Image 1 (cartoon, rainbow, N blue to C red):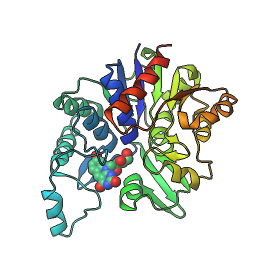
Image 2 (cartoon, protein in one colour):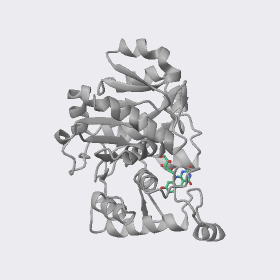
Image 3 (cartoon, helix red, strand yellow):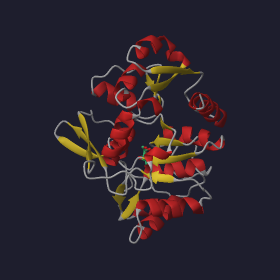
Amino acid sequence: MKTLLICGGVGGAKLAKGFFLKNHPMDILINVGDDFNHFGLHISPDIDTVMYTLADRVNQEQGWGLADESWTTLNNIEFLDGETWFQLGDKDMATHLVRTQLLKNHSLTETTKKISLSFNLDINLFPASDEPIETMIHSGNSCLTFQEYFVKQKAEPKVTSIAYRGLEKASLNKRIDLNSYDNFVICPSNPYLSIDPIIKIQELNKFLSQNKEKVFVVSPIVANRSLKGPTAKIMQSLNLDVNVVSIAKHYNYIAKNIFLDDLDKHYVNEISSLGMNAYVSKKLVMRSIQDKVSLAEDVIRILNG
Ligand code: FO1
């Protein structure tokens, strides 16, 4: 039994950690829509968030970046009146320096493999694509890159639409053989910002829509609120009802199964009427390691039939 986890940043990384601790056979396909160039460095926030989380090195409060970080370089950038809106810690910066250098002669997939082995991770962390896919946020007349919207402007602009620059030309990570997986789990990451730039890659989109019964969504919305980040706010901006039913409708064309929180069990009938199997889990909110493991156990139980 092998699973492909489809994963964004913080929320996805937490479920991936649960699967990892359960030793569930899997590869992880990670969003690259947040990637950007900063000070000439190639930053891959979601890849790093998953990698640091699995390696027990993540800053637990933030959910991104490294624990026990120091900020000497950032403080000196500030002294030089440089850009400090994107907080790069000294240790984290080493990851971006090495990645940027490796990328001169290697693909992002090869680069990620090499860096993750340094973190003692013998697991495939696959970038969704080796070609760029950039999540672009339209807010009225302005068009922002993901990090400009999310970090620089603190997710405050009203989102009017979202585009994925490069998506039509990008191919799915070449190392992925879709037929080799028994099932696909869509992690509780932001559907619009983090998951769509992966599942809308043509080859994957076609495969999932033809194999819906193998696809399991874990809802990023619990009790009409986001598990993390601006998912609920974006849903409001896009005039969607903020509840797990909207999440089910969003994924209905590619997924037959969805996990929802016990607090949302009153939505089961409405979701079933969409033709989806709704599985109720005790707790989708993952604060502790035990939360991550028990949600992974709930999902794995259903995957195993
Ligand atoms: N998120 C922030 O909200 N503020 C930051 O300054 C910030 C810096 C940062 C540095 C490296 C890295 O790998 C991630 C970082 N993130 C930061 C998270 C990043 O913006 C992610 O794209 C989001 O967490 C969404 O997944």
